[in-house]
Amino acid sequence: METTKQKKIVIGAAAAVVVIVIVAVISVFLMNGPQKNAPSVAGNNPQTTNTTTAPRAVPTRLPTPTNVIVPEAGAMNVPANIAVPQVEAAASPSGNSKYRSFNIIIQAGQFIPNTVTVNLGDIVNLEVGAVGAGYDFTQPDYDIKASIPDNGSKRIQFGAAATGKFVFYCSSCGGPAKGPLGYLIVVGT
Image 1: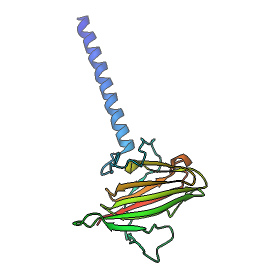
Image 2: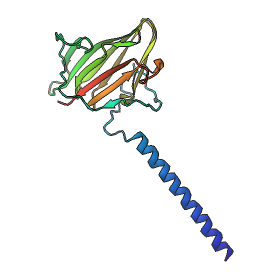
Image 3: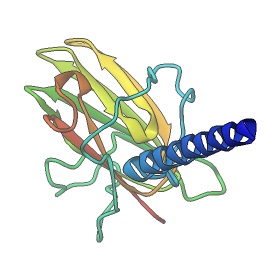
């Protein structure tokens, strides 16, 4: 009779451990949220260093703003903080997506310009240069982290695979909570 009682205690303890593990997993999932539709482009660009990023307090993927205009190459009368593509070409002969190339400078603790706007499906090429110090360009939803030395530059290329307003930042400067910050806006077509 004593062994039956011991078996019940062991089974009860095991059940309690299983419940605690399930609650812990659900809590972690609810705190971090599912990464639905988050683009996964790791390994697509040999010139970009991909790393695992630390948990972030500031969200890096927000809803797409309304009434966003995607500037064409050579566009005039565009606000100074909006990047205008230096090069633009059809990405494929049968689709609406385009190859768009932008120049961004990181200087004095800010991205210049700080907003890149593209259409869903576009191929995005960012030529990112650093002036006055070394910086990095980090966008965790696209799994991008590239170090840029002072007076150097880095090419970052990826496909705009999901709509949204994606925050990019310099992680070595303190991350999204401290800045500098910039935005990649991907609008649906």
